[in-house]
Image (tube, rainbow, N blue to C red; front, side, top):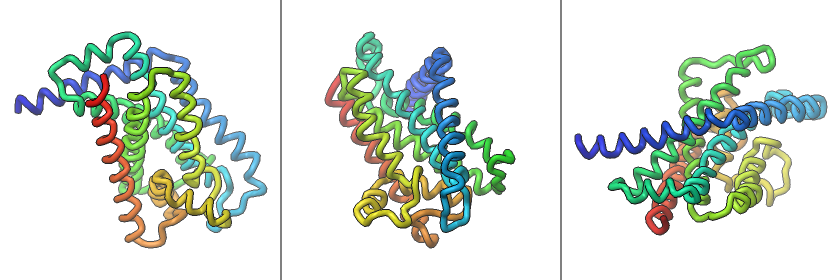
Length: 260
């Protein structure tokens, strides 16, 4: 029981700190809400007339899960920038010298970013129940959708932590995000479907772990997907996302153990 408390309290403290930092930065709140909304309205409206999918949906409807993924990506990843700032300010070194395992510290950091991304994603998800989208979701599908969003957020925050832990420059982190994290989103099927793309691009999308996370979300929202065609495919997609989570967490912990 004592050991459990020694894990829960540090995790909660680091998690709570992420929320405090987030709400103190008003510009960050506005950016994480308005940028995806503008993306969705402008790009969705511009391509609605020229986009034809195999499911006979407009581009705004097709693009909606991808925008939720963008919200989770940006919120989760930007939360990990504070690792670099905390190292410069000396806060991170203060945390690392406490009698708390590095895995607990990493878990608290990841959970904080994950829940921030999940919260922002759920707020954007509310648009699904407006006349703009008008998606009907059962309680079970909604619970599954939120669970998948949590899984995606944990994966992306873990990836952000393992990248940020090795970085000393915020500018360098933004550069990595531009060439690694943003393409993960683009080639997940968020911007365009896998149907009809060149073979090499299809395999890039198929090897992208986020493609399966997005597929799981689409399966809940529209009962359709890009790569899945049976329950076995859904299980495979879920398995790959869980593995993506575990690998990112394990590598992040390993990096934390190797460097202060």
